Image (cartoon, rainbow, N blue to C red; front, top):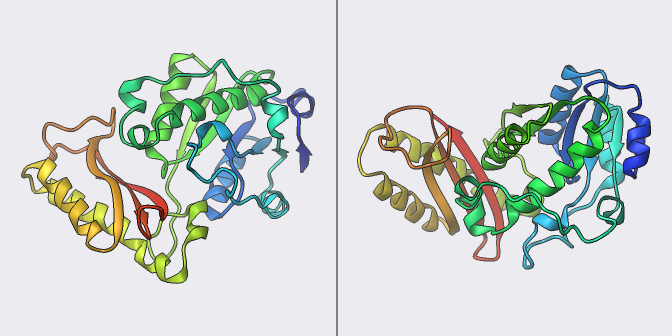
Length: 282
């Protein structure tokens, strides 16, 4: 496994390669990330994983400086999974000058849900992903990129970006990796105490209950409000618990129509607690 830090060195390492598979990460890797790498290895003989904590997608009050950075352990895990190349740029390597050109996603998709509570988040995501795509695929004729379904809205935004820019990249959605308890694996789970890890199961349970209630019919807005109240009663601070259409994340006319997804984001441990997200298709 090669470790490279600049776009020039990455392209040199990929010289002569056709259609590699790529997994972008911010490091602090867990089994969820590694499952993406395994899927990428099945798609191509050459797999690239990036490790880069992207400042552009963090709001001023969020945890950019304290975000866990575990580079040596991450590389050991990637090597064990058969990853070919680790692209680990420094900030000056990926952004040698202020990134004044940015990718602005469709507001109808990107300014709702996560975008409402984290304004500018998807602009930061799209900008860094576009730059990483150019670095990895710019000289290889395209390839495959694997993203986790846990970040449901992000996956949709990236797919739409690839479609609208006609990028020669196949986006593969990987199922959400979960602990035995049902908790969706996330780097931010590392902020949770043992007691909070048990409490954290309440988010996925709340989404399951909301989906079951929506299947029965009734006023969807009322069902969502009840789900939020129930989660608050357990000590959470929810941003949203909602049912949307899978195709466009709009509110369905009839929640019994199928092809829906329940999505949630909430903080555990008070308003300044750890923010977790999850989703459930139904």
